[in-house]
Structures are given as structure tokens and as C-alpha cells.
Length: 188
Image (cartoon, rainbow, N blue to C red; front, side, top):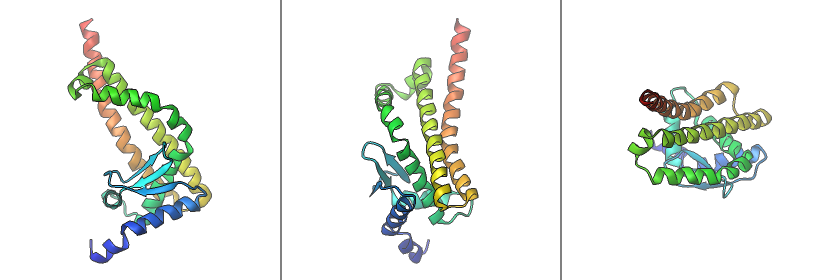
């Protein structure tokens, strides 16, 4: 990347692009820059969209399709706003999410991935996350249809890439779960 590109895609430029997208779709969420290592996030407790400028540009570069950065950022912003539109459901999941986090903290990876019951809870977490992601993408699509910010093909490419990550991790763990379940059935 040249110095000119680094200046063009600086933190302030990304912040302005994200806030202008939020305004363009008629929402009012606050934006906060962070260094989380995650390209963009939605915090349903603070109702805030977060972004890691460095990771956002890096994630954009990882896409195999030639998509302009602006289209990528606008699409991800609408996706995070899609989570905001589903805020009530996210809030209702908080107690269960905390239980799952505590379960993961109190058990080693070996325990989590060899105990059928514990692994079933990991599968439940994946399914919850995928549902939230699909809902956010559905909401983002509605926002995009109203605002006409990103063409449908580009939007779908970015959506499919985002969902693929969640689905891939889910499929890996589901495969392990099926193997453990099969072994426990053989022992009966």
C-alpha cells in the first residue's frame, strides 16, 4: 500500500464513512473506534457501533473479489446496524450468553470438546450466533434496499463471506459433536 492510500484510508476517513452511512439509513447509533482486532462490532449494551480501522482495511484486502473499500465499509456498517435493529433479542440472550461464557472459562478446551453435554452447549452458542448474524444480514438488506447504498451483488458477496466464517466454525464443531455422540452411543 502506498503512502497516499494510507492517508486516504485513515482512521478519520473510515469514521466519517461509517457515520455518514448510519445517517444515510436514518439511524443514530454512536460510533467508537477501538483496537479490538475485529473489523466492526455492535455493542448492544451501549448501542454503539465499533470499528478497528487497521483490521477493517486488512479484512477488506482479504476479500477475493474486487470490491471498493467504501462499499465494503458501508455494507458492514449496515450489517452492524442490522444487529442494532435486533437489539431486544440480543438483550434477551444476555443471561444465556453469560452462562456460556462462564462455562467456557471454567472448562478446558479438552473438556469442552470431549464432553458431549459441554459440546452441545458450544453447538447451541454457534446456532444462536448464526441466527443473530442471519437476522442482522436480513435487516441490513432491508436498510440497503431503502437507502440504495450498495449494489445487490456486492452486498451478497460480503454477506456470504461474513456468514461463511460462522458456518465454517459451526460445521467443524458439529462434526466433532457427532463423532462424540456416536462414540457414546456405541458404549451403551
